[in-house]
Amino acid sequence: MRPITFPTAALFAFALLFAVVGCQEPPTEQEKKLLALHEAPKTDLEKLKAAAAEEGKKLNAGDTNIALTATVELATAYEKGDEELGLEVDFYRAAVLYKRAATNGHARAQNRIGVMFEIGQGLNIVRNYAKAVEWYTMSAKQGYRNAEANLGFMYESGRGIDQDHVKAAEWYRKAAEKGEPFSQFHLGLLYEQGRGVPQNLGEAARWIERAAENGLSAAQFKMATMYKEGQGVEKDAITAMRWYERAARQGHNMAQIQMALIYFAGKDVTKDHVEAYKWLNIAAAEDDRDAKRYRRLVADEMTAEQIDFAQKRASEFSPEISELDPARDADMPR
Image 1 (tube, rainbow, N blue to C red):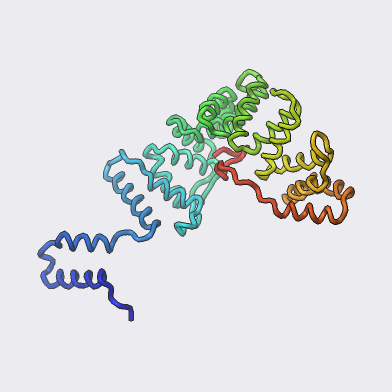
Image 2 (cartoon, helix red, strand yellow; image 1 turned 180 degrees about the vertical axis):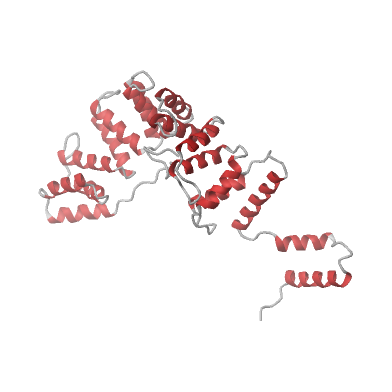
């Protein structure tokens, strides 16, 4: 039989006391504190849920001048799953909480609801590009940079709204000036192609390099190509290789193949079959046909010992983790 702890015994005593006197006398301050302590949330998840519930109560009471921090934090935990809080992914609950905050003007929540509509995320949300544009617009007008980038992407691709490269460039620029890598990259591409802005390869390189410095592997790969070909920058094979390597270390498949070809050719670097095979082995793990084909060609010029060593080097490779949102890549802003 479990022993009765002091707080539990105190609760029994209070209950008995109230039963005897018919609850005619209110509890003392000490009794109130003891009861509040017993009923208080114990875990971080309980505390977060309690804080979100309190925000909900305030909204229902007409108080809209609150930050809704706990509501959005809990929504994010449901959307992505949170091992520390013990939560599995639950898009339905995430959407409900985001919607509560979004309808009350929370810019990040508005953007996340837009994302959910764009990709049809969750059982209760069907893909609807027009709805996504509505929510992105609300968030972007508040200056939220991810929403500005997302809205630029919708204008550029013509999703849920008429395609308009001028407006795409305008929204990309707003986010790009705030340091958002996806928009920096795509604004650079617009300058390269002369869509929505005058064609300007120097300006293209300037924005793409900023995105590359901010960790976007697609921009790093593009920057390497620009230095390799002298597009918007002075031709520089060594700088090109540095950008290829940065992208390759982040897991960019085509950059890994380029690194292999550079080492195999031995131009501007010492010829190194082991290093070439290593990068091709890494790229081939993603079922890349070109990587597999090149790997066979490189292997023809290697000894069995060299191949074993290169395979060992490849098995030790672990992609560098970018600080960017993992849901974001070159084709899908978030």
